[in-house]
Length: 374
Image 1 (cartoon, rainbow, N blue to C red):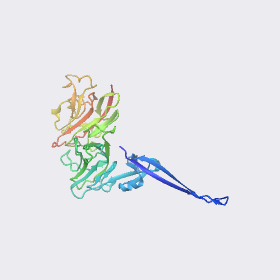
Image 2 (cartoon, rainbow, N blue to C red):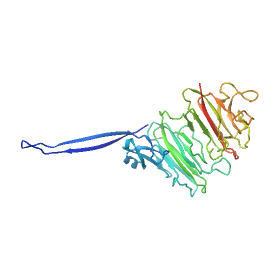
Image 3 (cartoon, rainbow, N blue to C red):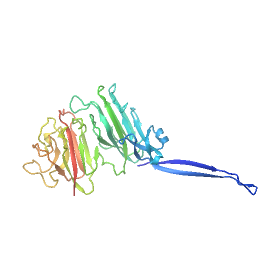
Image 4 (tube, rainbow, N blue to C red):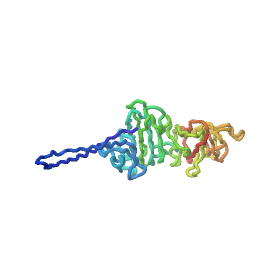
């Protein structure tokens, strides 16, 4: 969606002259020239940082929106307007807006426990989703009960499944929530502080997505990935600790000409790219949901090629759908392997229960995917 912005440049030239010709006076003529320049309110990149996004406004509109000009756009007719808020209880009624901790980029330590909420209003009727990009997210404390959160952020929409509460370190991650269908529906971003000793640092880009946008995620996809290859990580993987109370779906867009998707552990070794069990162990527990009732991931119908079944009796099942334990591979084996599914849409579901202490080093997962041609 784009709102059209009109900038009217008024240039007036007054040409007058009194010429004597045959003892007569000719009246001066007045000429006026109007040039109209129109430009859409598109997303722009600030001049101070390639990762900071703004909206192309006129200078006066940027001031009215409470933003700050950070570079030019629209061939110099507009400014790249960066809008941010750190005020608890704020209502956000502009697109491409940042929620930042007080004093950002410095850290913030709350003096008391409590919560801080931001209400996001639709910028136009045809809005279906809210996307949060955690450009900076660290210091939201985890509990002494390993895997639980003392500080956390939640996002709530009007329809669909809300994302889970998260804490720890999540810089570079993102999150989707569903708005309702009416023009007055809102979404809420809430921070809850349980720790007054841990310094927090966050800079979250909040963007609204049109119901007809080609980049809109499927409904109830907490994270949405595109491209024929990439990686998916559990929240707080960078913090080295799997979180409790996680129940959500990661979605990967099926690219044109591709019918399958291959998954394998990341080649990085720290943190451990796959450790989904409260009592860490090396072997995989693939396909055995009862082996890891407290935490597992779900990718339907996995096998080495996504067509032929897993070998029996080496594997207890022909196809895996749940993965847990200490590696991605054949159950009871400790050698990681690549597994493929051809079931669409491509998803990776995550489940952890609400009570089990996910004893360190239960790191979660960091999996690479590559789509497979038809």
